[in-house]
Length: 86
Image (cartoon, rainbow, N blue to C red; front, top):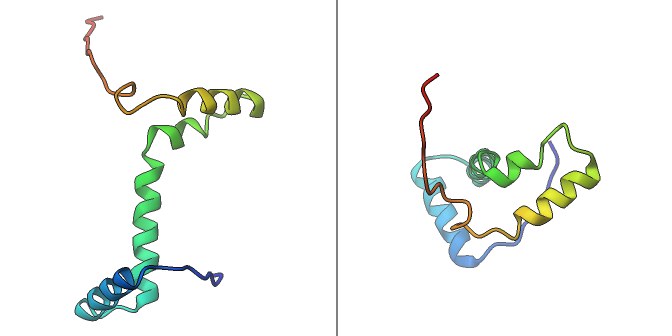
């Protein structure tokens, strides 16, 4: 493991201390678990998944990501679903 320094608001630190105390876990464990949870959530995101497209060159991947980053949340919503029977 590596050590990392992070700046947090006093209010956030206070909440971390309170929660850590209630659940009897260390500040470090609480923060580590919160970061791990956020990482797992972000890995489910479309943009993250698209950043790992193995069949595109680095240049193609950068071009795709640049275009996708221009899309709004509305652009990424499913507007129509169709089922095909085969």
